Image 1 (cartoon, rainbow, N blue to C red):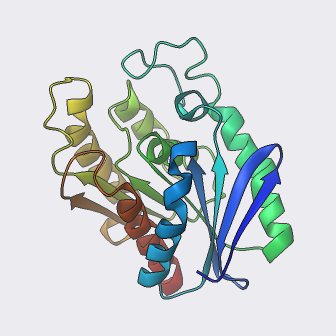
Image 2 (image 1 turned 30 degrees about the horizontal axis):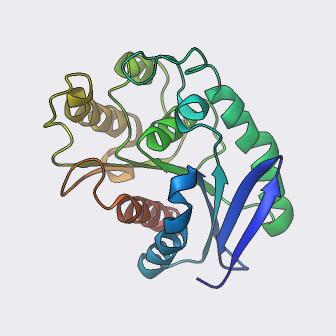
Length: 230
């Protein structure tokens, strides 16, 4: 990548990777344990992408509390879980995106994430039309009531990438094992909403913790290509 910068934006630690003259902005929530792999992820996106981009990541205080759109005891029994997803989205919309617009000017934006980050991206795109595309790698679509919610709240994005590891549904935990049926249902729903050419479902080899950065890089690269060719 051409450069990497570390900023504090609105009290959160952020990292910026990419071109000085991007054609698209990629936005990703990140946990502290992911910081060591972000530069490699950005390089992998660059190796796949055919248009310049900027990737901005923002660090979360608590992965579960900051990203869950509502409570689900199978994910967390903490009292604050499910109460702060809207706050995280407002940070992105009212603080992070304006800071990036001041830096680069208006750009199409893609929101992406892994696991709960992917679920958050799907949920956020049903709340706002600020994101042209969504990159949801191994999203936690097994969360309680997700299918009913997604049917009642169509995506406002123009394109959505979904992926899942081919071993993720083969686990003993019955709640998590719903993820395979959940991702298939999500894909079918998005095909009806967007058309088959504007959504894709990719089955990756392995379980949930296999090649996280690579899966997300491929998701972002697909979104970049979709925007580039529109």
